[in-house]
Length: 147
Image (cartoon, rainbow, N blue to C red; front, side, top):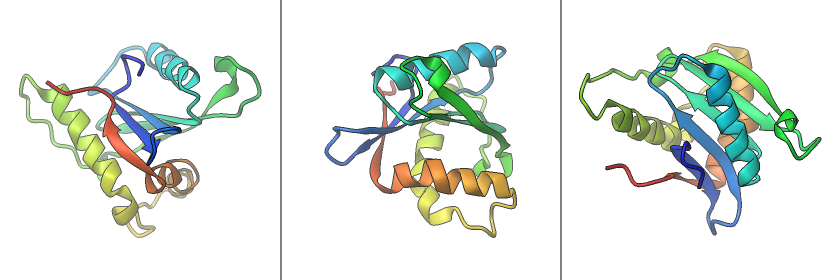
């Protein structure tokens, strides 16, 4: 698994990678994080990737028009603080805590994502088209041990 990926969603038999997730409390260079995610998606042949911060989520999809990063496009950027509702603890383990929080959020998203809770129509459509199908037909796991 690529080193920069925090959460992976795989099929039940682990033969197909359905979703890669990179969590960041904050970052200064979206282009660099995007490049890392796209490289990881290509490396494991994953159709969907997301970057999640406490405030924003970026969703990417591979259109399979080439074998390079140009095939992967940004589906959308969404404000998700009201949906995620993450409260920073300020601890030294904040990054790992956020990874665990996002993993739990994804695991419960099929039960909690309702039209009433998600007022942004584009976010609702994107979740239903890209994120929820991967989660509902796969297993959400940490990509690496969290120490």
